[in-house]
Length: 97
Image 1 (spheres, rainbow, N blue to C red):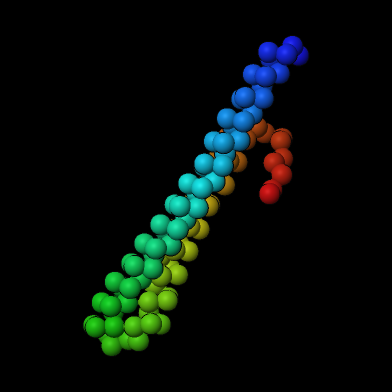
Image 2: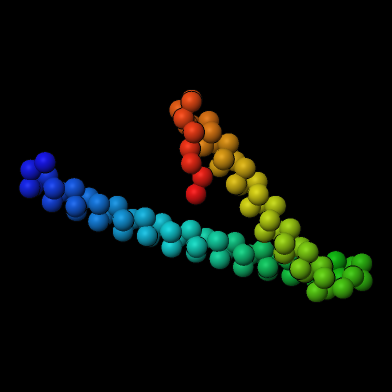
C-alpha cells in the first residue's frame, strides 16, 4: 500500500471507530429509555389494578414493569436473531460474542 492509501485507511478506521462508539452510546440510551418507560408503564398498570382489584401496589408494579420490559425485549431479540440467520450466507457459522 502506498503512503496516501495508508493514511486514507487510518482516517477511515478512525471514523468507523467513532461511529461504533456513538452507536454503542445510542444503544445504552435506548435501553435506558425502554427501562424507564417499562417502569412508568408498570406504575400505571399497578395503580389501576390496585385501585380496581385491591392488590398490593408494589408487587403489581414490580411484576408489570418486568413484563413490560422482558416480553418486548425477548420478542425483539428473537426477531433480530431470525433476521441475522435469514441474511447470513449458508454454510457460514457466525461466532457468538
